[in-house]
Picture 1 (cartoon, rainbow, N blue to C red):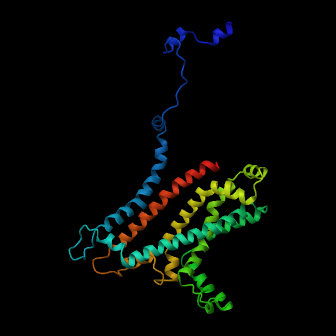
Picture 2 (cartoon, rainbow, N blue to C red; picture 1 turned 180 degrees about the vertical axis):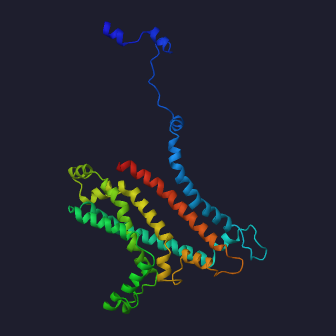
Picture 3 (spheres, rainbow, N blue to C red; picture 1 turned 60 degrees about the vertical axis):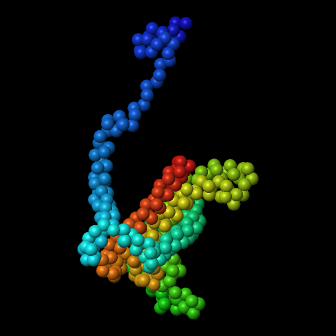
Length: 317
């Protein structure tokens, strides 16, 4: 047919286009990533201020900490010199006890924050009252950033030795004390649970209604749906939320310093003591070694958090 012959290129035409006789014409290939970057140099220029800020605000302090952790101070017996003694001291004795205390407190509060925050976030997502949902999310945003001395004072006035609730319910007669590991755990949950609500709510909103309907049509109960469908999909987000809560609790300082002082050993309090000069002569840089330990742990935490978030995003898009 004339139409077919006009639509189909002849072998000669194929030769003219660069292909041999009988060779199919390949579709135009997509531009490679480097060529795309070369065509859009403005992308790098737009990111340059952020990269400079990160280099100055985070890179230089991190470099100073790394150098100081491996050097002695000028008042040391041999003067300023390279050494690994600071790192050795940071993982022994009272310093190691404080490091483990911070890890235990952070892990416990993060786990409790996940367990308590998930059902609360689910109640918010499934609520039919839009005003209630917005109020809870707004309050969570405020409480997640409420800490430091004001939070410590609020709990001391409420649940301290002379706090209102302590006297009203005679909690002291039952062995309650706010200035212990358990009391500090309760205080940390005050801002970790709202943070978990903010973190897990987008993932809960990503659960599709069709998944629940399909499970119900196949005779699954609500418990079976959560065990076999919802929780496996939410697992990366839950683990990512745990990591985020762990990092927030691990880096907290002001609340614990104002409330418990040195009665609960924490790595942040030990760093503050070392920076204030509460160390032996020549061991001033132990604080930098302790800070380096925290950076390494935080780096490991973020190394777990990033791939978990990527895996969760593939399911919830």
